[in-house]
Image 1 (tube, one colour):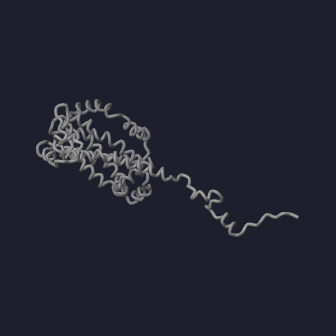
Image 2 (cartoon, rainbow, N blue to C red; image 1 turned 180 degrees about the vertical axis):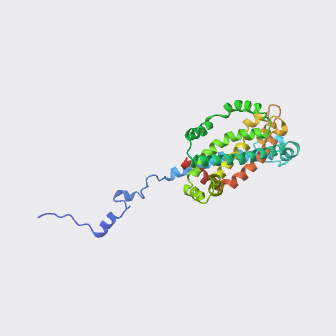
Image 3 (cartoon, rainbow, N blue to C red; image 1 turned 120 degrees about the vertical axis):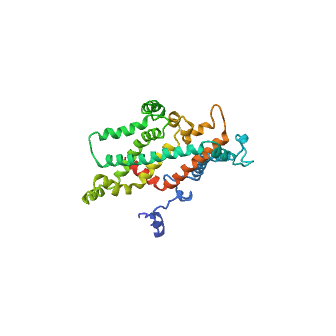
Length: 308
């Protein structure tokens, strides 16, 4: 007489076959954590780390703003503003050459952005659409130029500017900033133009457009995110640069904003109140430009990075 194992009931069989249902002792220990899922302790540590990073990033500009509204004798005080004053801003705007420096910076930045965007866009389009001898060495040259630090390039650029009598001239700074911005922006624009179908160029040629007409009327309007990134990078390069401006510009009426800040705090004077007020005024245009261009920045940088 053979012993037969007890048959499983239908409910037990369904419970065993149900997907994602732990069996036996595993069920008593609660929900099984999926692979890659963070536990409560890891999530809390992550959020605390992000909060600390935000505080580290926000505290310097916040304290700069607070210090700009303090009297000059309280610049190093750890207290918040006790005696609120706008004396620093009044002094900077009315008793210094700040507005002249601002005009010089606007002129340099405007020329740098316009010329930088045009040169980078045309260069990137040519590298994306045409094949010509020396194309690959040119691409490598655009990358290699980004490897040289500023300290290495100041002396040869200074000699060139002196030879062509461009020292203490805004156009000299514009040319210098173009040597910084154009190589990187051209490589990035090439990657962005690679994402635009070549069929658009072909349709333009069928309609009788020249290569430049195709670029200007058909392709360039589709490259707004890339143009925004290029323009923003050129703006930041020219607006916040100090080393070249300090070496090439000497007359007080020819200084840019970044160079003019050094007149407030140097080996002879330490006017931290005016320094912080001027820094806040310089940061406002940069914040406005970033706010205007931010909707294009992510898509433009992503497209350029993926294809290049």
